[in-house]
Amino acid sequence: RRWSDGLHQSIEAKEGISVSEQSQVIAKVTYQSLFRQFSRLSGMTGTATSDAGEIEGTYGMKVTPVPTALPVARRDYPDVAFKTRKAANDAL
Image (cartoon, helix red, strand yellow):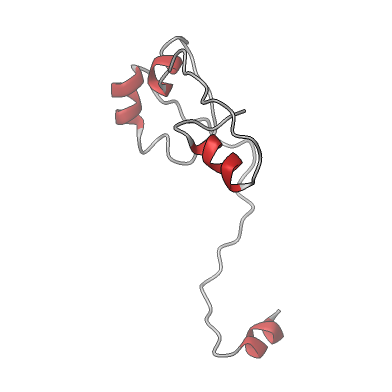
């Protein structure tokens, strides 16, 4: 794997090794054009539902939330601030 735009050659020069020729980009593919090649996509994210309009507009696909199999086990506690490191360690 090589970095583009001369970055790879800059690092080679900095490290004192022989500088290779810059590689040539043959093709570039954007994420949007890559994703449009598939009729269905799947993934896990916490923001897809809130960005459903943008996803539908960009990719022409609908977002379908899948509920969790088990109830959420996380417990949310209120934030606590300590004046000293010792007080924070003692709270553990």
